[in-house]
Amino acid sequence: MIAIEPIAPAEPVAVPAKPRRRTKVELLETVSASRLNTWLACRLKFRFRYVDGLVKPNTAARHTGTVVHAVLQQWNLARWRRVPLDTDAVEALFEQAWALPDDLNIAWDNDAPEAAAKAAALGLVEMYFRDTPIPPDEKPEAVEVSVEMDLSSHGLPRLIGIIDLVRAGGRIVDFKTTGKTPDNAMALHSNGLQLTAYALLYRDATGRKESAMELHHLIKTKTPKLVITERGLATEQEEARFYRLVESYVHGLESEDYVPSPGLHCAGCEFFNECRGWH
Image (cartoon, rainbow, N blue to C red; front, side):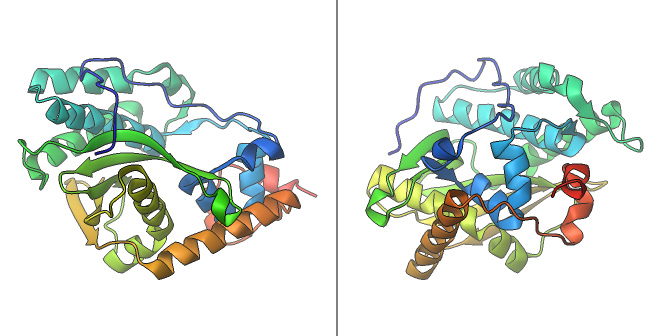
């Protein structure tokens, strides 16, 4: 079993870490799925976010995701500790998470002010507790656990990551909040790198393979809904693919190859103006 600290469900919700400037040497010491995904999407965006440490206002969607994750984390910790978490406690946790100091920098949408966004986020939490496939008496193996793996035998940095939930029997769960119902095949493809990383981290920490992996999508539609995408173990091919992607990351960082990747995804990038001025 993965070891986790005995954190009480009532403890304060952690404030998300803010971007900060990092040196190339520091970035080459470790790699995470989130950093790797940013690198593969656009190397210049990676530079703005992780090398230059540019800080942008938080978005309503990102804040909603952070709050929902925080409440689900505390719910899973309560089940792990066999401590009841009633409706009043859940609402108190939600209010605490929503009111974090970080929300002072949120760029609220004109069409979705804070009150509407808050109501939608609470609706997602209530929907998940109502529709979750996880039995209330099922004790997790681990909750929001920080894990790392030494990849020096492959000539690569240490792999680090935080797994949202490991269900009983080694079922790895990752929570997603999104505004659109995902296509299962696309969801597995776009999250494949992250799931493979979690599988490798789990195997290294426990000495055994995961039994399955699940993506729990909390959909922010008018009527919130839950979509679960399941898949089996990470294959040898996926593991080899992951190592090759990390190799590309290392080589690019070493040569400081921070070139942009223009495309349709640029419309939603927070560094659009900085990118246009790059030379």
